[in-house]
Image (cartoon, rainbow, N blue to C red):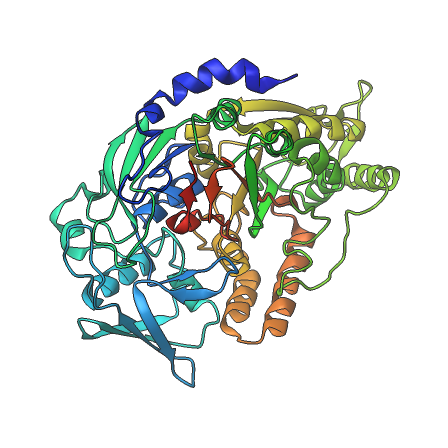
Length: 533
């Protein structure tokens, strides 16, 4: 069925705000349109870099704020607000030189004091507390010089300072002058500044007239319409009403590119696709149960059926081949279907979950549960995430032979992760992307990770120590080995059941030129992009 045609009417209604600027051009340049129209999800966790850790918020914050340093299209660190930096031989002292011509959007200078304020605020935040914990002190040497010292060498310190959105350089004066500053921030350090934000509707951005990177951005205006209907969003792109949408359903992206209607980009981001588990109570407080389900969850079949082959599959890895931090480990779950079923069945038998006459397992001597209780779980997924629905329905079919009854449950996306954090679900579908593998492990697997309460939902001090060692060493081989040890612990404990990762799929008009995707799923490449006529 062609879902796009059915959604055209809705798509046009959703993005009607885009039409006003759709043909805006700059006559003085004689070039293409200077307005870019984006349709994507609303920044669900707000616009404060200290607390906004969801991808939908980070993609908006990165339009407004620069960081001290950034990544290029090859994932190399490059200067941004800091025009240069040096590191002492012992790896403990970092000296940054702030651009003398760097200004906020209101024309005031970006100083070392602003940078120090911003980095300290980030270090105190949930978003970057872990990777910046090694920072011992900061000294403002001059208005353009900032020195940071560490308690010990850290391979990932610079990566933390390059975290788009989270490590944003803020105006200390503007933030401290307005307790509601982040409701609608207007004094910004990045390529665009916010002109208007209408909740549940849209945002409008204008090019920062005082941006230090002269000649950029090319787009004078970005209109950002909020929509969670991925089918309608794809239709706006197909009809030319929108110039960009993300994240696209891979099947839609592949189909529309083949038709010549769009181009799409894959961001090969470190990340996770997983089944989250409440391990505080039955049935998932038993590692045998977690292992049994891990043998049966959809892996390669979910990739083909739900992701059109886009992204990696996990049979025991959290880091994938081709990454410098990859170290080969046991592929425990890469076994024939009949062997997986037999092994999973034995594990559930041992855990006291025996097959019932109706084909659904029931408890028999399971602690804390009455005998005869069915092994039946509701599995919520984000209602706006089409692949999550597909994956959860595939899970339902995959676990039937094992005697586990799964009921997929579409759940309001706006409250989904709030309720995950509140431990409302026994089992749930989830996923996330990160700038680097180091950020992935620190944020999702450590006791104080910024999203551990959404991902692993555990605290393992041995894992914390291994991750700290991996992030401190400058030896990539040693770091890969330490991360392999972490993965082996995860493999044995299964705090969450990982099935792979999802690469962000960014759909764009064929007229968009000069844009590039990044491994951190950032759209900072828009700074250098243009639209042809």
